[in-house]
Image (cartoon, rainbow, N blue to C red):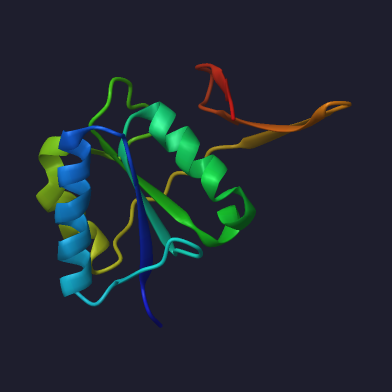
Length: 127
């Protein structure tokens, strides 16, 4: 089975460079980049970037694992700090992915369906 990935990063130069380094490392280890149906979504940034990535892949959440690398302001959803890039690659390349599930809340109104991620008892962030 081909291991596929996509990268969603914060729109700053630091995060873009980190994304490029990760992309090159994964491609050289046999991963394939697939923006449409990735098995793994690597999120580089903070919680807003994470929420954006979840929203982008909302239709395939049950098939996708999100891994966060913190390079933003808030990082409650992030699994690694930007200084832990080596540890991240050591975990992701052999498939030793940390998995933590968060409930996805759905609310339907006359104006549409809305989703939110609830991080324990912190706060609800609307997508």
